[in-house]
Image (cartoon, rainbow, N blue to C red; front, side, top):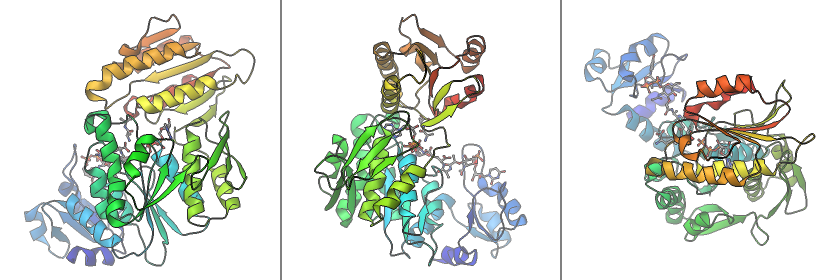
Length: 433
Ligand SMILES: CC(=O)N[C@H]1[C@@H](OP(=O)(O)OP(=O)(O)OC[C@H]2O[C@@H](n3ccc(=O)[nH]c3=O)[C@H](O)[C@@H]2O)O[C@H](CO)[C@@H](O)[C@@H]1O[C@H](C)C(=O)N[C@@H](C)C(=O)N[C@H](CCC(=O)N[C@@H](CCC[C@@H](N)C(=O)O)C(=O)O)C(=O)O
Ligand SMILES: Nc1ncnc2c1ncn2[C@@H]1O[C@H](COP(=O)(O)OP(=O)(O)OP(=O)(O)O)[C@@H](O)[C@H]1O
Ligand SMILES: C[C@@H](N)C(=O)N[C@H](C)C(=O)O
């Protein structure tokens, strides 16, 4: 593979963005909704890239020593990543699921790093570009194990990522109602996420199976090696001891872990990471230390105390019907931290639900009506459908209108849950709380 020699000459350094520093990289000119990457290839070379892969034949012909023509640079990137991964005979653990992929990936990477030199996905670079970029960071003599997060919003994506990453192990955190639109409904999500286990079935791999999610269990039945968690009788049992203000759990040998993640749903993410660590022989004391040390700083299940004395559960990274219900139920159960506090929830639209959007937002309205929450602030066009008639609910079509109201009715000394889809970016309201 000619491109592989350019990759090796670049010491495995790949770049895709001319706005970032380029020293000695192999630049892939990708196309996106805003730009055609080839337009930036000369700039990337001028900034120090060694070589550029472009879909502009005329540009490539100007200097074959600096350019390689590829009709589809993205495909070239993906094929290069696949070829590079094939040079490594190491365990590769793929992590997918509807919710909790990044959190679980972070947790189990921290656990595995206690015993191995681990390559892991950075942040949530988990898509058709992020997965190849992750694989291309594998280094001979440096990495003993890889953890690759895989995100998807339609069928066939996870199957493709598996062809590139060739996972030996796989974990599906859960199968819920995220990206309903692209997957075409709940069955599509199960089939799409299940592509990871289908791959492991074909290749004789190992699946970590969350037995509290029957859809995950169903998708795993044909995988030859199945390791289960977290119930009694599973391979790696664990017990939820407390969920508030943060999760505490007990591992199979009795070791207790006090985590810094809030929400009982995070018990499953922690238990998954413990199961993986136990399977790979990480001593339990090290597993417990890694889980206890993880402190989210990424708007995911994050606890924030504000100057106005509010205790925020800042969960504004994303939202879908499953994670919204899990977060609300967990929040509603939190004991008051002082006096007779009212609980406040500030919720934004859930995106990518397609034809299910109206119904799912309306269902959220019913759930809200059943929960002991003092004040509900709903924001966004879709949230109109969740706007029940309860007197404690305030609805705003836009975030600006909600912000104006919050300036005049600022919660003080209360517990506040903030959650909505990424596009709502509700974390910008934190300065008002
Ligand atoms: C293509 C690309 O990498 N784009 C990144 C770029 O975008 P930009 O705003 O510049 O516009 P373009 O995309 O049109 O640019 C085209 C290329 O031109 C380059 N370029 C541009 C200007 C310039 O001056 N010089 C240039 O070289 C540019 O770099 C492009 O290569 O920059 C943005 C800001 O940094 C990036 O956000 C953008 O990245 C895109 C979104 C991307 O896909 N990045 C991946 C590495 C990635 O993994 N991103 C994750 C996405 C995670 C996610 O959403 N996961 C979902 C499921 C995903 C389903 C999948 N089907 C999908 O659709 O993605 C989940 O639920 O888990 C992330 O960003 O978090
Ligand atoms: N096990 C779980 N069950 C339900 N909801 C969860 C679970 N774990 C996390 N969440 C919710 O999902 C949010 C996002 O977490 P995380 O980023 O780890 O998920 P993700 O699947 O990686 O999402 P993305 O792919 O968009 O990054 C959290 O803030 C929390 O509200
Ligand atoms: C940000 C992306 N990974 C995601 O989760 N999108 C959904 C639609 C969201 O933001 O809620």
